[in-house]
Length: 207
Image (cartoon, rainbow, N blue to C red; front, side):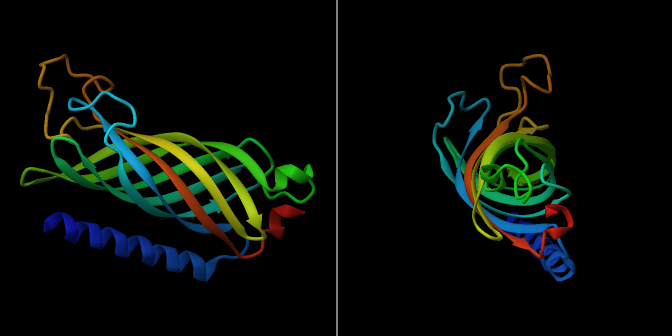
């Protein structure tokens, strides 16, 4: 029950932030939702895309220019292997687009399509038995985006969360390995499809 209360609290704060951003948006804001599949890597699983499960999220993005964007994102999902683990993650990410996406005086086809990479910092929440765990993490990944019509974007994204915790799978260093951030910590991977809407007029950098 505690997990669901914290999840509802985080969701409420996120959507309050989304409404505040939308109300003040002038030229460079973007808001969207996403859905897809996830899997985990750790002591209970070392196979990519094994036991995939659904994941959902929402985000708000500020596009500083046609290449750089800062994104605040909320995601929630569950992992099912020998156990079931629900989690929520809240992150701040930086995106870099390889093409001048949305820039009106760029090459015509780059206005509507661009691959991009992302990296940032995040905080995940899950239960370990009766104990609540907050796990800092590093999200990173890549994706592609396409502007379907004016102000509407779609895209595909693959990302990894490197958790600074080894208890996501309810097992903490069972083989007594030397403690290492990279070897003894758990990972969450997500492949998602997203839809977003540009809020306001991007004329501030489209010219």
